[in-house]
Image (cartoon, rainbow, N blue to C red):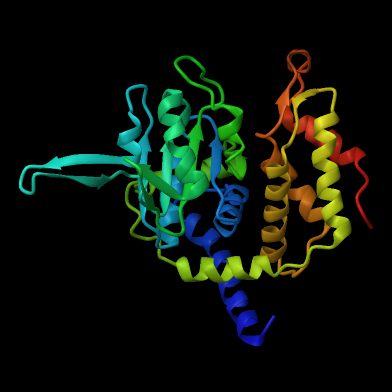
Length: 322
């Protein structure tokens, strides 16, 4: 790496590290979720956020977009939402007597797909091309999306009435699945004290832009330069192959999942200040990167098994390189 590239890498890492402080101005705790979101941005990947209502998932994404100075749009996914409401559609203009394309909310940098499992599969599928190809095709014309473009979708893990579970093919297109936990007792006390002092979650004026598209681009370039030892690459493959052979799983990790784990491990290594990937990096990112790509067998689910638990066992049994 040249001296100039190294300087840009250090600047970008410092700017992205400052995100935690800005997000903490409105959201108490959730450092691991913020880190996962930054990793997704560095890898140009999409995020599935899962947590019970009231854990500040929407506020977290809005704050992050402001701290990164990125364009942000939110879509509330409902049973009557149509694909054109997301991607945009052709509208007849009486003045010109022609059809013109009116962009949908997907034309943004950070799209919050709120409660994505509340809308039917037809509308869910409208995001597939945008997430994979970073474009929207209407009437045979492909229209590129802005760069960066990241979908952050939320879903409620406990309420299933009136929901449409995402199919495996669409789940596999999310780079990571992050669980948003309920705050600890101390964090919840701190949150209440803020509200008692007049905190308004709708007012984000205190949040300043500490990074932007330039820092993200420099960070991506630095992540691509992170060294991957062949033994660590083999370790990633062995972990993913072990999920396909697990008696508790009826669906293991696809090759796309292996490349995703490689990408997130490199991003985490760079954020940690290293230019090489260690087996510990792979272990740290295995659960958020793979938990939504595996499917439990019904009998294992009845016995109380979870995706995280199965992955934990695989991490314990697959030997890591030294």
